[in-house]
Image 1 (cartoon, rainbow over the protein chains, first blue to last red):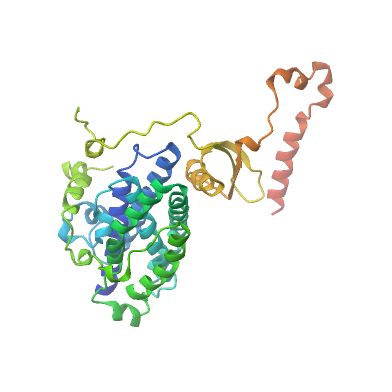
Image 2: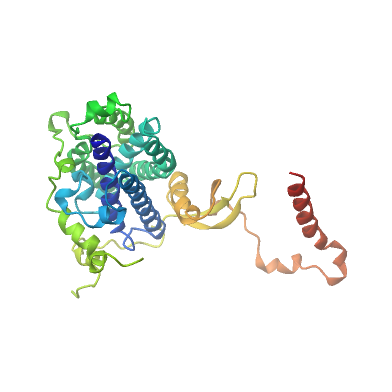
Length: 249
Length: 121
């Protein structure tokens, strides 16, 4: 039970936080169509978080709104990649590309989970994330190959995101339990598939992964050790909710 | 600079040099055709800006397909559309005498047939 909860919390918190971060671009996106697309995906992610919080609620955890809005940074299980500020658009696109790919593979793996409610969520939302992946990969190829300036910005974004992205796969204390009980194949399997999937796309975008000896995953997020950026973000995100947590929306 | 009431705007970095777009620097437009359900017609719904067909599909999906049902989307480069001229508009007007050409009854037939089909099921 604890193993499953840990998995659900980190998935939900990742989607909530990256969803909120991406929504910070609403109204400020580079062109109208992209503003709509990026905002719409942000909503998708927050919806996915809600579905996972609802499942947690059926397992005895608090109400979804309470889980989303009433926890402090140290109670959150998100990885560092999703919580750092939006920076420039290249960074936000790259983050969304790297994270969505990991989420899609995770959801695909979970469609076969022995935990039926989780498998159902994975099946239901897989299509949404498929678009997020298509969006990310298409933009990556476009900007990686458009001109020197755009290539350089994407390369910088990749360098800035990389170790944070490796932090997605921070192993939990329950990896073997999850595998033994056929709930989830685990973070290492996920990471291997993710690398296999994104490497050729990064190549086609004329971008280079940082050299292997510089790979130092930013771990800590899954156990509540976050960057300094998460708490101010949570404060801003929950400001209105906390005026009156009992209000009906 | 004035402080905005939107914290996101206050965080923006406006020190970067502004890029001035020339007239033809914008991406070209693509006509979007949206199909609600398989088997139905693709209907023209509007345009998106994009630098290539893949990007046009990515933009079209959220701009026109984020609400309700979508089975499929087509994008066609606007410059590939052959356009008629409004000057020749009189060519299309029909005189009232040719009322026999108006197939007003057909729409009702369609509804009747649909109803019959539904009843047969």
